[in-house]
Image (cartoon, rainbow, N blue to C red):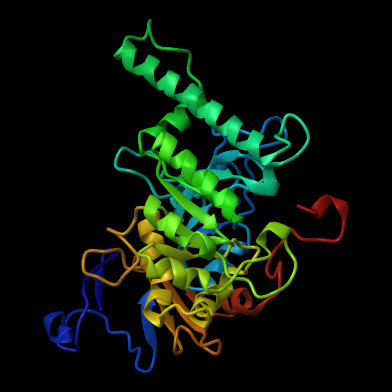
Length: 387
């Protein structure tokens, strides 16, 4: 593989060496080079979204609450991750705007954020249903009320959309700006994808019902019961970002989670990624999460795709990352062996042609092997240093 300026120039046989004799050679004999891992659902950087004032807060931006100096970021690099979708929590029907980050080295979150050609931030909108968002007033108390509140808010957004269109740029006719409705209009216009937390089969179908009614793009996250309604998901053309866990506990609505979900979805042509939901699954174990899908019947090829190219497709980034192809960003990981083996180590991680993790460096080894909080200067046992 030949790279320059953060991009891949060519991928092929040893003959490439003669075509670029001036290039610095890195010997990876006996190693495996694979695309950088893409986590479509992560909470690294300790982000937070909406508060307890209302169940629907699309105006909240998670980028305003990400601490890129958190040790969770270098730990993710130690796991081979190069691109992440940072999400607010799932305790709201709408908890805010997500942001897509490249795990470059940087001093500010803006240096990591992916941006559109016009300079606006790339990201989606986090939504949720099920028991997470059912609470005391002003939050909904039932699943039916949850859907009704979301439906009513999208109707308001449609009305806002019509008023803006009717104004035709005339400032005197424009409605007062509403940041929340502006965000929902982006969803209605297809400029922002909905990333929807959902577990139970009936909750999944509710999301698909709303998708059909309002025509928005959606990625279904978690889908513990996805194997029960795989046909319906495929028919709706929705992508899925699933989680594989192998320990008891968690919420009751996820009790039927099964490793076969990924295989069932892929068999029906559904774009299926595997995510960590870090800290639910530590980012350093993301490849193991893909391996669990293989245990559930997914092919090795699709399992590796589930943490690379499938994730890129769900985030709309497949033109620049997710696979090792000429013209794409030089995002890759160098492994000691088989990506699906639990004994394999991530030895190096590269983002846009820059090495951001190297297991041979003591500080990076600490991030790869240390426990929670390893390397953090903020964790302490006193009240003043709890955050």
